[in-house]
Length: 460
Image (tube, rainbow, N blue to C red; front, side, top):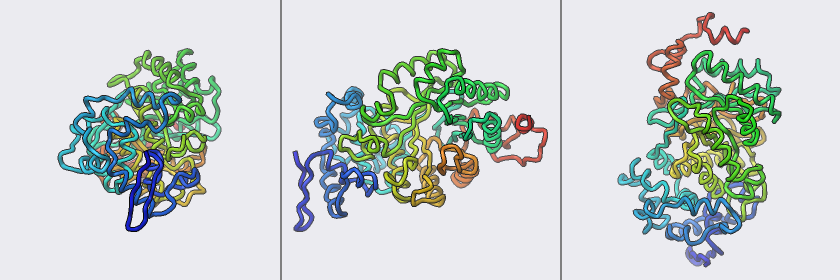
């Protein structure tokens, strides 16, 4: 059924719910490239006005992608909890926005409706919100996960230490790893993006990370971000796998482009959970997403990129992951053109993930050919810190020399912790103090100790 919205003498018509959602979203280069974006600001405002009046129930009655052809759609419908939905079932999208921003909606209220919300509902309401709305609503949510460190607790923000190297040289990786630890980073995960997908090389990297973790009794987890099939093989070989990683998307076709299915992810989850390597928890999956992945694979079924992204969170929450993050500007300006679009997308993704019960982090990043710079990343980092993001990236100098993109640095983590008073994961924080890297307040101690055992390891 078409939607019609008049503004003055102008009458705007939207063919279906899919089109309405796409045209209600903020300007996005990827949506324009796909031909689904609003053609004018007037059309965008008309779409938002019409979307505000759409009952939430309609998203259950009209799946955007038929479940007969898409397993993610089937998953979304199977996840929906009618009892959790009942308290908000009478609301429209606009009324949901008002409820989310009201004082009545607190952490407990959000938690009670997590499984009553669908990705399409939260994507829809995000399109009616300003940036500050996305911050204040996401801040109310809290998703805690744990393995060897506890991530997502109030007043805390963790960091993935990302010691990538362009040739997977163990010496370079270890040097970056030690640098990050000495800056107090690594409580989310020490995660390497390998250059190659050679199984023996991946196993060797896993062994190196685990050896250092065991030597210094570091309460964190490691991960080599290889394809899920390689992680399964590594587990079969007895490698020390803490977390299984995979990039995921919001449609079956896009996931097939990644070489995965829900059945394969089920197999991987069963394999890694059987190891029971966690100490304070057993959340053992790590997912990355990003707006534009489905569009770039021509696997979006006419949906806008942000709605596709929100659907990926249905896949993530199926596995109760330790970590899930949007690599927000990584695909490039074809999908997020400039700093304004990247900032907005990062806030949208964090908000939608939080509302769906996903432990959301963000790789606050951009490619070198985007119209963005580190000032834009400072803005997004600060806003996500206020919004209660679970974790961000720690990259030496903010410049990943293997993936060739710009992210956030160890120093950026110090900045946001200082200005917002954010602590590290409690287990990791206690370890840093024992290792005389930080004081009892979590502040870095001067690096005048040439005999520090971590620095000694770097010299070998």
